[in-house]
Image (tube, rainbow, N blue to C red; front, side):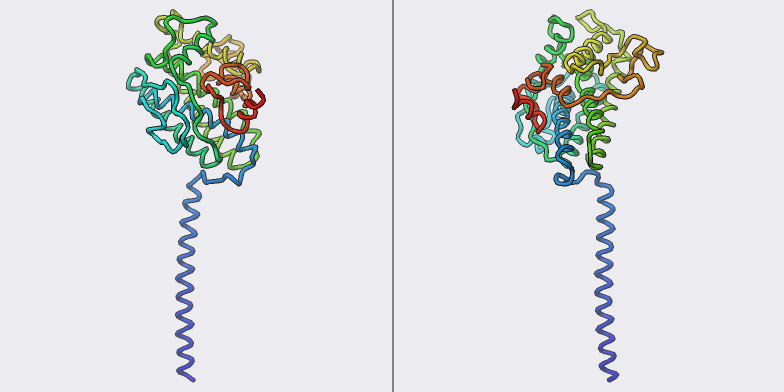
Length: 322
């Protein structure tokens, strides 16, 4: 009887050890999982956010592709096909991208911007299904056309964004601000915490990029852009006015120098950041964004940076109605 009791006790002790070890392993696994989950902000959440959120984020994905390609090509002479071909999902290579003749400082900044856009693409594609890279036109010719439209006449020689620092910064002024407006416009329409967190993070960096570009240009605001005999300030004002015209929703864009009544608190003409009467960023809708990046003033008519139109449910819905 005593032998049976001892044997039973041993078996119980062994079972307890097995359970304890298993529980310890499980707890360790759980702690590791929770640690990495708390540090991994973006997870595959395609089925956890509303379709309306995904649709809005996919409008922005088009712009992130554009920025990534323009900045990478400008700094290094190559784009996503070299840096991260998986993100293209087989989409066509951009038209006309090439390395710009940049000083070391500007090249360094622009390359950082390009890599940041790669991160943005990864973040978005980890949150929504997304789509392959749309056909993009980042050629000198398309930027020259945009600048001609801004001035209402043909500049001679044609404006070349890749020619030097100041031209490239002016060309860069054309792009990130539009994405910034889109994120500001989308944010109050988002329903899920996942989508809001993503857009907040994207907006922070896009705003920073726009601020750096504007700051570099503001420092040289009185410089004459050779050979056009036109100041940097006038270039920015013309581009902002064009975007307002194409957007068709009033003033949501301002150059580097504005009438005093449009400056911060009506006290200054310097306009280092574009903002409304409360110094808040202007919002734009997907329709406005598409009108501007197409360069047509019509969300149904592709062109500009997107010869075949943008991708995603919202953009495609407008193209289908054309």
